[in-house]
Length: 426
Image 1 (spheres, rainbow, N blue to C red):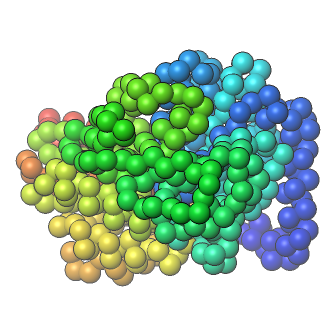
Image 2: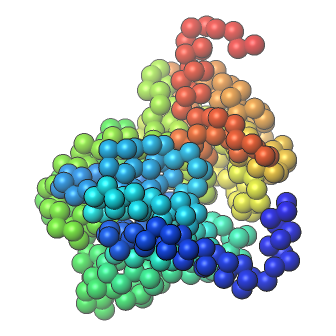
Image 3: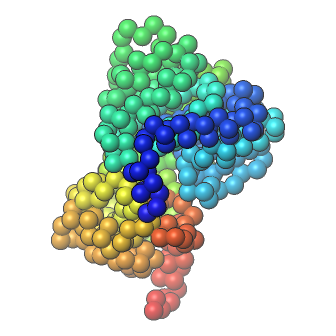
């Protein structure tokens, strides 16, 4: 509450200078470490963490040492730890400290998720980005940025700052804006779109794309990719990573080998239970991502019923989308349970009620997230699918003034075990 009051009182240009100075100090204290690295920034609304992991895997296959910082994990050399900060793009000192550790460990590359909020606070400043990757864009952080156009412009600042290589999703309707920024070399990826008037643009297309319960498949120049991750949208993520690999001299065959051996991305279309019904945990918290996840589960698994556990984050985050998420669940799910997610300083019951405005009569309200997951598992019969969204692999629930340890996947396993052993739920 105090932070909100301070933000209203202090002029925006003063806040901007404060963040800029902090960015400079963070870089100076750690000796401007990005100058010793090839820094890759991945931005967009959805898919950033998956693309970071895929790029890291491709570079490692070529024996190119890479550190990475994503909302899932923080990896430097052989040290690989879950990201428990609950920040996709951390503060200036933490970020510069990470880059210094990467450089000191002899890493050649550092791969970062770059967020619009981070850019707004100048966290990208004094980092020498060599490659910028754009995944996709849909409405998010609108209340923070003031409009979708402001949100898009914030993302664009990464490309404005990166003069080396740009990697762009040609299938996204906002790509023309990102193509307008100059770069030494550009790579465009996608399924269909043709681009004209770009002299330094290399286009990588996926031929014969397909998605199934076993993973995704596609071809590039007669090279068949068979990647064991769920969701057609992950073909786009794979293409982004492949473009980065190609830009660094990694062959298509090496890219293929790297992605074929890719392990499941934690909390991203993660199939936690396979039999007698499916349980999928996914991070989807935007309308666009949620719709894609539901569509993929329906088409890949063809479940008898889709039982969906959803919620929405508090803290003043994009309140507009709460009933929209509920409406999408109503359109795709057979049974809906609306529950607590990350209320922060808001009343969780009010957030749930706002989501339920869009769900209609088929929704059930269960405040306790564990009980909501338990109820979904109880209702499932062989052949059904339970989809739990909003948190993915996040390690805690953010409540007012405290973090409550949490992991949707572990809770699913615990409650599924109780169900199978006929234990009393009490």
